[in-house]
Length: 96
Image (tube, rainbow, N blue to C red):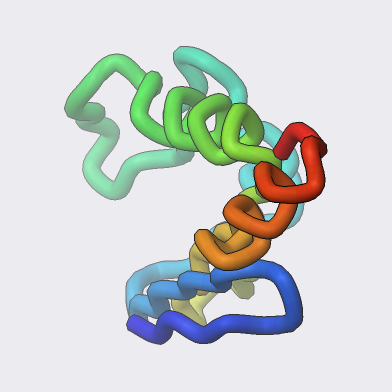
C-alpha cells in the first residue's frame, strides 16, 4: 500500500499479486451487483463494495481506478482532494 500527496490530491494505491482481471472485468468492476469471474464458481457478497467505494470517492471530489493484468495481480487506487486543498477552498469561499 502507498499513500502520497500529488499536487492537490491524496493518492492511495493497494497492489495485490492475485489472479488479475481481464479488461472486460475491469470495465464493469465498479458497477452495482457486478461480481467478477470467481475461481471455483462461488461468489461471496452482493457486489456492492466497490460500487459504494466509487460513489464515496466521487462525493469527495475524487476518482477511483483499477489497473490489472490477467495472471499478474491488480492495483486499486483512488485520489481525493487533500485536506490542505479543502481548507484553502473554504478560506477562499469555494466549494470542494
